[in-house]
Length: 124
Image: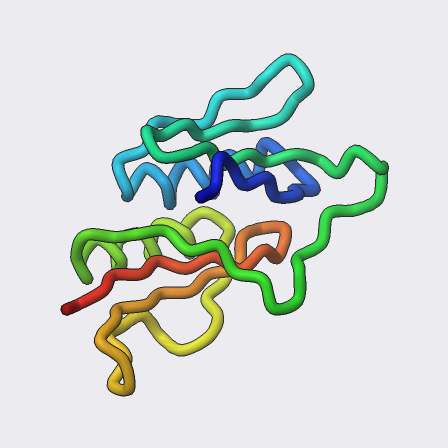
């Protein structure tokens, strides 16, 4: 359904360190900086981009917005979460784990610009 997702970042170098770490836990190659200073992560299923907002205003997170990444095991999700915390992210929501009311594993982080991201694995 999606070709790409672009999110705002106030500091591309800081954001790249964070996303290189969390996406590296998912097997993604480090981000590539383009001539305009944006950072892109390419996969077979889509592209994640990081950009300083083109209108010159500070990047801010969307209230109620979350970008989810698939993980293949709870261990990978835990490693993803730990990599995020170790590289400038902040934990949010409930602690990483299987949700009792649903058959899914979730781990949530806020990136250095405040964007909310999560790791998800459907258990069933």
